[in-house]
Every structure is written in C-alpha cells, then in structure tokens.
Image 1 (cartoon, rainbow, N blue to C red):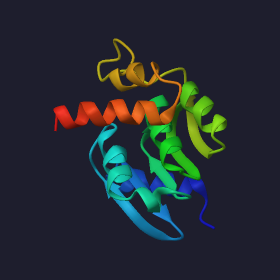
Image 2: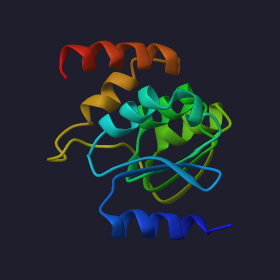
Image 3: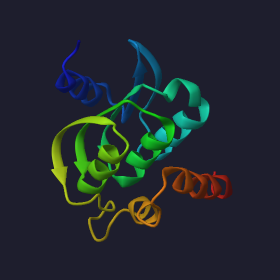
Image 4: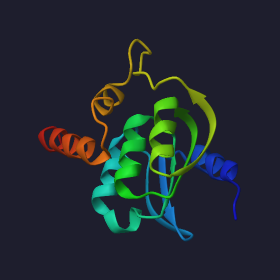
Length: 140
C-alpha cells in the first residue's frame, strides 16, 4: 500500500486540490479550490464515495461533514482542523494529516472560513449537506 505521505506529495505536485479514489481507481479529481469539488464529487458519485479515500488539500469541519455524509473510509490531507478531527472520529473515518490547526480561516485570515461557520451550525452531516445543497442551487 502506498504511504499516505506519498498521496499528499502526489496531490501537491499534480496541482489538484482534491483526489478521490477507491480500490486503486480514481473516482474524481479537481484543481478547483474550496468545498465545491468535494460537494460535486458527492453529488456525481454517491455510491462510489462509500468506502473511498479522499485526499484533500485542506480539511475543515465542512469537508469532514461531507465525508461523513458520504460514507468515506479515509481522509488524507496536509492540513486539518481540530473540529474536522472531531467529526471524523465521531463517524469512524480514519485520517492522516501533516498538520493540525485550530480552525480553517478565510482567504485573508481575518475570520473563520464561511463554510466552517455554516458547518458549525449543524450537528448532523445530512442537515449540513441539505443546507449546502440549497445554497449551491441558488448560487451555481
């Protein structure tokens, strides 16, 4: 089995922000930033997401909630927040991270990321996913 650090290095050198795989097969990958690629993958490949490995550039509470909602087995990331770890642990999702930070911040580091704030309002991944779906539908 490939070392999780190798998967992070591959993500970083590829220019991708997200890589999703299952049983050695790529399900989805994207260079897009933020939460949209993971949300798109979950919508396009809901059955394949169950039991898969997500390699994501940054994993905060919002991404962890989407992983929990979709039945992901493992998350690999260079950067993870403490609240993301709480979610992953709660749902039995294995994770590997190079660095843990208190929370994911917005681009200019002046406040928590808006998606993290939104995810913080929900305890259940399905409820967060439903709200995110409503927002994405109104702002394509």
